[in-house]
Image 1 (tube, rainbow, N blue to C red):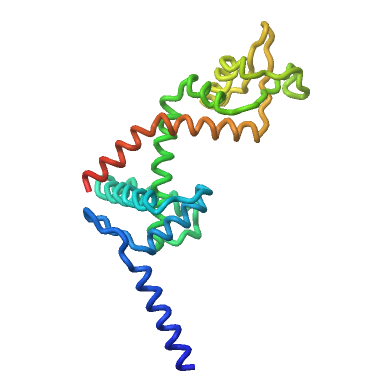
Image 2 (cartoon, one colour):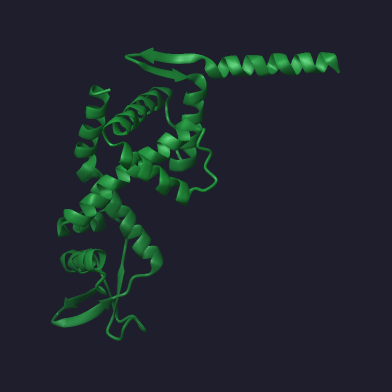
Length: 222
């Protein structure tokens, strides 16, 4: 029994040493092996793709510096953000700083996207999102989508984008006019999800420069 306890203690000691092993230490940025592994695992879970060691280290530095910058410049915002995160993730382990900062970072980025959507969205953005989707058809109906009369295609992208813009911004039921006849644009939940995902990608490209400037400014000021 005593031997088993010694083996377990030795294993835990080695494990703790490995977790505490510093793999990056530069310009006041310190990253341990444990933090790198934790970030890589969580990244795979969230984004469903693997991340290279170099990119993970870069992301951790940017993420940590951004959060540190916000905690200094706008502590109230960070506290509000954490309350929202906890409400949406009641089982979140707040002691896991890597995961907490990842969720914070995602929320901050989404805030840029939301701000653009609310204040700067253009029909050109909607057109681009439609063009990103291959082989999509838009059912048209003259009787409130009880039956489908025909399908609109990418050739009708201007009319479709105008209808979708009003749908996104003002929750107006989408309809378009073709050959002087007005049709309801019938959107299933799956289609709406595909369209919104494409639009989010377009908006991400629009706010990328602004968001990048923000996070790199946080790096300089930390």
